[in-house]
Length: 424
Image (cartoon, rainbow, N blue to C red; front, side, top):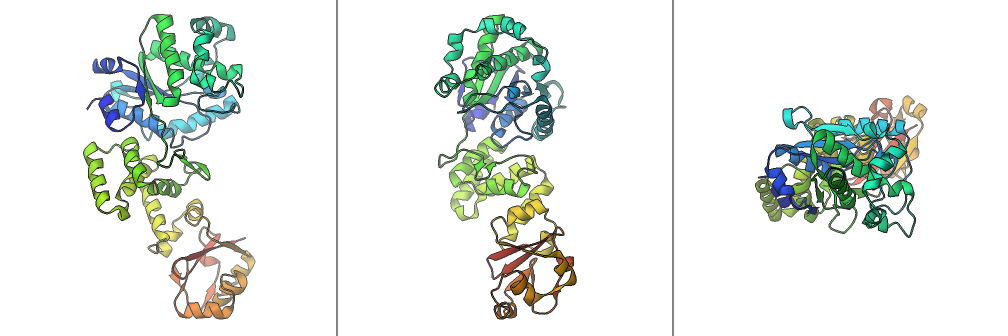
């Protein structure tokens, strides 16, 4: 299956310029996607265009990932209601370095003729004087042409700085530069980038009389109309320090049935037959969440690692009574807090714990998990209390040797009620 057909059945084409299929049929072609390093991590919204590059490379073509060190210093007005804060070069360089490492999970930079290329537009923009830019780029595009772009029109009432207005010229020049230096004929991106991409094709036509093409993918939304990749806490990041592998896994595990089928097509490399088979299995037993599990396992493994996937799956089972003391002890502090987010937390003094606390006192006097010692004794007698997933009785003490991450204790009261005790 060729590249365009592959994207079509996956629902990954929103629009494309005429003639792009013909140029792809002629042999290996080069295309690029731009990512502005406004943060030191990609989020899952970036993955749509990254997966376009992945399929492009798998079809035998050469992908370029452009990290926008220069455009990131300006800020793209597309889809924004107000101007972004401008970042300094040091911050942008740090962000670029982090994004480079994440892209290695998806693209092959060592595969010979169609090996992926990583570039930074700051490298060719930093020596470009303002006057030279006006002469080389600005004179080829009229103000009328630039004003007609949706990204400009939507901001005229609220205000648009000259800096943002010029963004499409800088992105257009990126396309021209890659056309000149890497024979890049295609730019890809989200549908909100259509105007900026077309500016590049127009600049190539007007300056060189050359031909270039655009392919855009739909902006991904959830079945309920909500913004894809957003939770109450914000974006779902690829960096485990920003979104733990457990929370990342849980995001995909909890998507709706309608979204799961769509996301399998966009974010995995599963074949059409494999996805349709999963959908048939899911239809027969929707309560088993077969689609969501396949989606969550595949993406978590590729973004993080097989080991992190196993840890995320094991952590997910803890809340459903399948975890053990050993599995709890393996959790990092970040994952532990992610798993038990929203669980009541109480605090006790480390010095008192170091001396040892009688179990009944620990459950009532020290933590208040039980309102009285009598209530604690009754449930202990019935075997309804666990500490770090190990069942408790009245005998013995709680001390520092039982701590998780040298800071926490997990108490389970009955089947469903958890309490996290933090030692300060």
